[in-house]
Length: 228
Image (cartoon, rainbow, N blue to C red; front, side, top):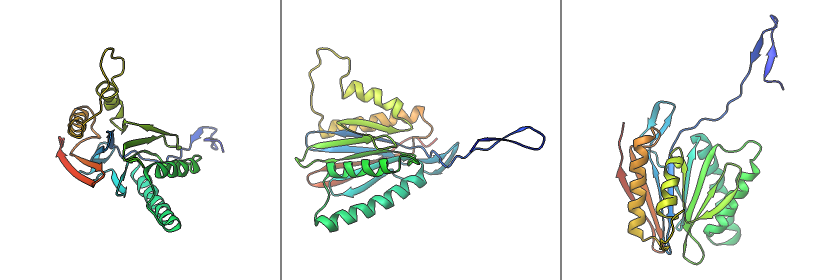
């Protein structure tokens, strides 16, 4: 159907269909040899309005896996509801909890199944793999999946990703030996990048929700950010 029609006066009339909204939010994840740390801000906004200052973008899927989602909040809630149903079916069919790599593939298949009318969200899956190593999977809206050791998604990703490339990935640095992140340095780095992002991105702020996944389970920490 044409998006421009001609009325009786032969003047063009535009018709637009915009089903999506961008409610902001940022997620950052870092993986180590036996842990993964993922954080999100808690500001949920639309345009120049703040809807709430206390809404995390992180969801615990298994005792070893966290999902971080940003973008259209109604799509996030719908996707979470469908994903919960699929995880319940998996546990009942196989009589075990799904592993993080298998869950990452399931999420990719679900996103690809909606490729003609995709969820308007950015997803990051962070957890421990079957060997107990930290792993991170990042996605585009139609399901392309990539395993990483660090990544950022959401409204501040263009600000944070170059910093992670420099400090964690050591991109374009010669003579700098590669090193594994420690848990303490990963937590401090996530706090630092959110403090920096909140200075430049109005859709990132209020506080940071941080989840640390280890073999002992999931721990939670919070840190205040600027509220203006």
